[in-house]
Image 1 (cartoon, rainbow, N blue to C red):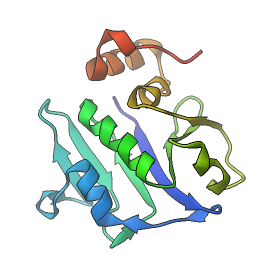
Image 2 (tube, one colour):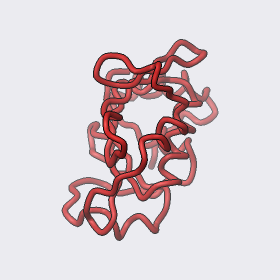
Image 3 (cartoon, one colour):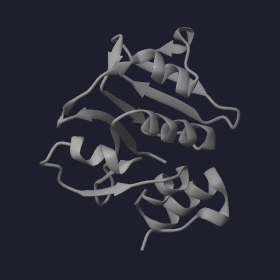
Length: 153
């Protein structure tokens, strides 16, 4: 599915950096996998993770191009959100800002324009993805199967 998502970390409304190694470890990236302008990892299902940035020793933001279908990726993304004071930005039909803990909310910039949601599981991230209904459902089914393919009310 052709869309990008963004991970951004904040403290008191300002960017907060985390060691690049933390991100590499969570996603299973190694320096030998660096290609082009970003880091690339292929999952066992053939889907590919491309993360842009990871050039500095510390990172406060990442761009993830065309997120892979592998559930392992989405679980790793949720783990990163749980370990950091961060949010996931999904700029689709209605921009959403997802956080994995209510404690992150006071650290976000005050001028965010969009819906802010607290997610408690990987499935909540997937349920937040909007787009043409059939395309989104097919994408989510590819990741987790029919049982969790639903739209938020």
